[in-house]
Length: 221
Image 1 (cartoon, rainbow, N blue to C red):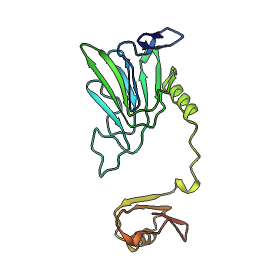
Image 2 (image 1 turned 90 degrees about the horizontal axis):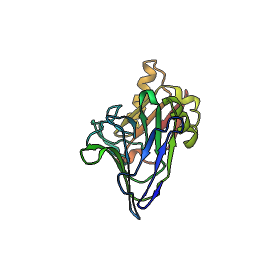
Image 3 (image 1 turned 180 degrees about the horizontal axis):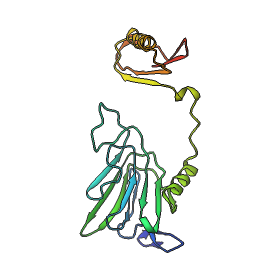
């Protein structure tokens, strides 16, 4: 750790490999803006930073991943989606895998790039908050995932009805259209556990929260 200007490194105890290093770029800490950059090895294998429609292995040149919940028709490539998970896995093959988790609900851009002046790096740009980092040393991808779940805590067990067949669609015109779909499932002898539907305009759907009908159908509006 260096104090002037402040910077820090995280190393793997077993082999002294540097996992996170902020020494090449000053940390910016303002009321409504944080910037934190770490150096990366050449051509790194970086995964995560969901939820998005990018490739599994993230691009490492001139790449920006925005963490900002987004709901839109279709799933175009290269866009942010519903969830925000500011964790990445750095898979270094023989030397192991580690994860870095920034515990923050602030909107942010995470940039991965390589330039002649700065080399390969990953940079956080957030709309305020604090720098609350968790370093997950693995060294296997499975162990990183297990360590991450120990930080965020385990997910709740799914309810039994959640394992059944679900249908979801946006834009039903009214309740009668939904009832017709449910009837058609019954007529075709297709088991249907749950109907999910979303409507932002139809007044004929207002007021419905949960409807349970025989034999065990659930309608969520």
